[in-house]
Length: 338
Image (cartoon, rainbow, N blue to C red; front, top):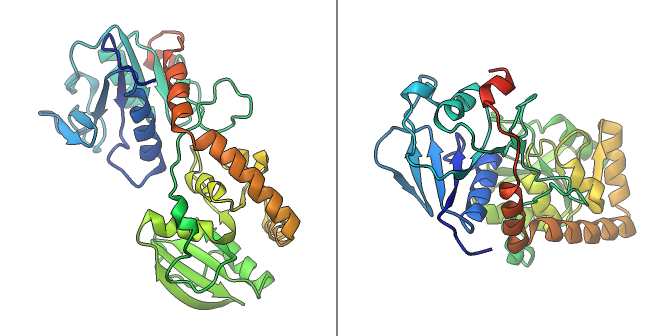
């Protein structure tokens, strides 16, 4: 799928594009890269109107900026001219301002969304990044890892086989005390190291005592932590693909995740378990201490993650199918209640 056609275009409308650390930006950029293998891609962002802004493989088109720093009023927004009739629009996260822009500047074009839409979005089609396993609408993603991260543990740790906890706290003022669920783990399993990652640090707990703190400077640092853990316990998986859970599975590290998160699909595929409360979390960890159970989940999770998220060619082909599929046309704002 490398032949680019110029009689059609993919136009991305993205508020998250420059938020490079967010999962939404990661997924949006990945889909844009795949779409660029088939047709020209234009990326529209809420930035000052004027000359396009270079950003890697893409030039960003600024619509202007509204009072809240997001999209301006539709009538005041700059917009790319001469869109081909066969233009497909991909929105990272639709809201009323986004839909108003589409109604005024791009009526009649099919629209897809990256983030799951809130409520009835009318003719907008939600791209499916999780689920897989026979779902014809599933397109997956390419989630890269560096396999070499599995050859050397994190330089700041002198051990492996720990429980890696990806925290659900944001902007915690200090590493102590640990998140509540991590505190339960270190109390219930006093002989195990519990490594809590938050705010670019990894705090090591054992027997309810803080043993040390190391920095997590780069993605490779995180990959090393994932690759050498006994299990990854993600307390707040990303709501679109749960990226860190996929990375963990690609390294063969089972996951334990909240049952109502986007990551449950990865666990249900055989690579881990879900929990609803503290007793269930502790039971999951107890089960993974069994070598046979751990080896089974490790192997199943790696096969699943590599098949669904490790093949860039399959991802490009899936995006091509999804973006070329027709969807009903109507006025977006009217259909969504805007």
